[in-house]
Length: 83
Image 1 (cartoon, rainbow, N blue to C red):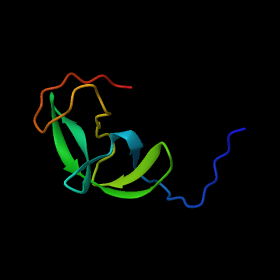
Image 2 (spheres, rainbow, N blue to C red):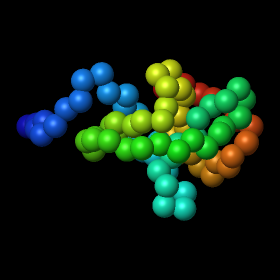
Image 3 (cartoon, rainbow, N blue to C red):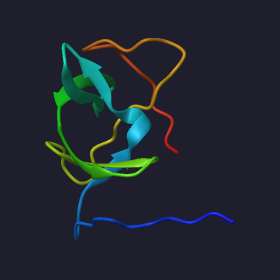
């Protein structure tokens, strides 16, 4: 049996996969798709669970990079694969 207990919720919150969140110099952020390149964007974390995190600093529809075999760097050219 799997159960989820909701201790807190936020209506209309923007969430992303928790695995997309990275830390650089103590600051939470994500790599977002900007054309054919990735760009570092700082975010503010809100509430979350084991798989999703509420964030501020992104827009609805922004594409965030998930972890990959190759480390990402600001300005790196990428070929996105959407899930």
